[in-house]
Structures are given as structure tokens and as C-alpha cells.
Length: 319
Ligand SMILES: NC(=O)c1ccc[n+]([C@@H]2O[C@H](COP(=O)([O-])OP(=O)(O)OC[C@H]3O[C@@H](n4cnc5c(N)ncnc54)[C@H](O)[C@@H]3O)[C@@H](O)[C@H]2O)c1
Image (tube, rainbow, N blue to C red; front, side, top):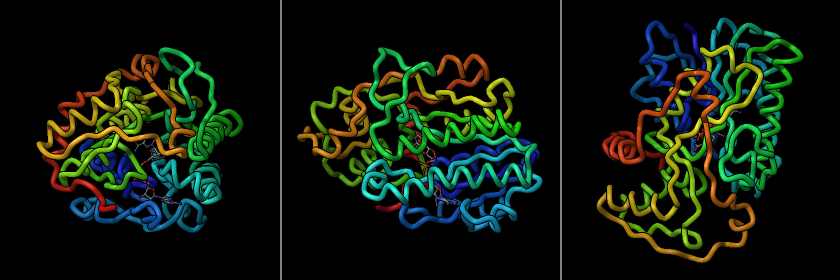
């Protein structure tokens, strides 16, 4: 089985590389531009470098796609602009990465490898604020920031390329991943950032009372979901929520981290205006459809995932 992981040096991608390498008879290629604005680093692949084919290149470049795409059985796309706040500061950069980048990949597949299965890592934030007690695939899409709008647009490209060109596409909507190979910076996933702050003895600042709930999931469980998605033809052409059913308040998450790490503290602060305007509120996601179609289920509770991340040697990319 030949597998290409686009964005494989990033947080989710680096976890997916390890997951794929653990599967029998799997050859892994990574295409990654090591984008400096996303704090990307080849260091995330250091210990597996000799076991993969690595192409330093961009999904935006036809020549790089021509090197990477032919002969692959599965293409996982984890490459993206991944900061909500950067998408508001530089919406054009976000659109190039999150819209044009996905169109380039789909066009490349149409030309060079139309038989491959392509799994796109999308985001639960494409729906914006939650209008229902439980969110599933029927929920309306009213994104609150440019990143989420563009991730939602890209999902539709995958759907269209399936319908119009018979490409084998599937999109998975993830929410709040944490785990090794993440980033210390507050601009990216908040759980990894909270862990970093606690480990360095700092104060985790929660906006408002922290009562807003989030589904959170260990990155290895997300990697397993991508692998399961690539092997389930019944998913093709659609987008599916792949989240842990565990949903905790932001305050509970911060407190659990401080307790597990054994250092750091938690404080409540006023909402910064820019963050308040893009805040999604309480979210509770159901992945029942994805689970019943694939048999996938997350393996790690928050407690178990936290213990594993704290034991990991390669933790986070410095801010
Ligand atoms: N981390 C989360 O909590 C989370 C939640 C929901 C969805 N997602 C989605 O999962 C995917 C992976 O997220 P992540 O947290 O690993 O992000 P990340 O920023 O850690 O990794 C992104 C990787 O993509 C690479 N990249 C960027 N532009 C590229 C290009 N043009 N060509 C090739 N490589 C490029 C970067 O160098 C980086 O290594 C993204 O699509 C993101 O939207 C992540």
C-alpha cells in the first residue's frame, strides 16, 4: 500500500506518519513545504526520516505534485494554514493555502492519479456556533472566521470532484486535537498550548468563565480515523465528523492539565474582543454516523491521552 501524506511534517501529519508506518506493508511518502509561518519543522520526522520518502515541496506547485502523486494508493491531505487568528490577519494567505492548495491537489489527482483515495482533514469549526444541543452532519454551516469558511469551501471541492470526476474523496471534520508533535504557540491548538504553559509553570488564562464545552481528541485517534476513512468506500463524496464523544468545559480541561502536569495555574480573564467575535460557544459533536460506517472508535480518554503526551520525548515545536 503506497501512502502519501501531504503536510506530513505538521502536528496531525507527523502522528499519521507513525500510524501508517505501523501498518503492515505500507510505504509512506511525505510532501511538506515546512511552512515557516506555521512554525513547521522537519524535526517532527527526525526519528522516522530513514523509513519514509520525504519531498520538500508545496501542494501549490505542479512540479512537486508530479513527483509526489503518481502511484499512490491513498493520499491524506493534512496540509493547510491552520491558525484561526492568522486567517483573520492575513485572509489571502489562508485562501491560497486552504482553497487554492486543495484545488491544486484535486486537479493534480485528476491528471496524474484519478484512482487514488484522498482523505481531507477538515474542521468542525466550519459550522460556526452550535445551534443544536448535539452537532452532526445535518447542522447548518455559519463559520465565524476565514479559516473555517475556507475549510468549508474546500470540503465542497472534494465533494464536487467526487461527483463530477469520480475521484475517491472523503473529508473528516476534526475538533481540538492534542498530542505529540504539536505546537507551543497559542495561535494553534489550545490543548497543546495549555499543556505547554503548565509544563513551564505558567498561568493558563481562560477567556470568560471557561464553561464553554469542547470535544477534544488525542491525535493518534485522529490518525486512526483517517486510516479507517481511506478503507471505507461507503464514506466517499461526503464530509463526516470524527470527534471523541468526551466533551469537557475549557475550565475542566485546564484544571485537568495542571493536575496531571503537576505545575502551572489557571486564571479567568476577560475575553479579548477579537476572540469573542469568533468564539463558537459550547460545542457537543456526535460522530455516530462515521463510527457506525467504519467501526472506528477513539482509544484514548483525555486522562489516558494526557498521560501519553506527557511521557512523549518529542513534544512540541517551540513558539
Ligand atoms: N490540530 C487540530 O486540532 C485540527 C482540528 C481540526 C482540523 N485540523 C486540520 O488538520 C490538518 C492538519 O492540522 P495540523 O494541526 O497538523 O496543522 P500544522 O500546521 O501542524 O501542519 C500543517 C502542515 O502543512 C504544511 N503545509 C502548509 N502549506 C503547505 C503547502 N502549500 N504544501 C505542502 N505542505 C504545506 C506545513 O508545513 C505543516 O507541516 C489541517 O487541515 C487542519 O485544518 C486540525
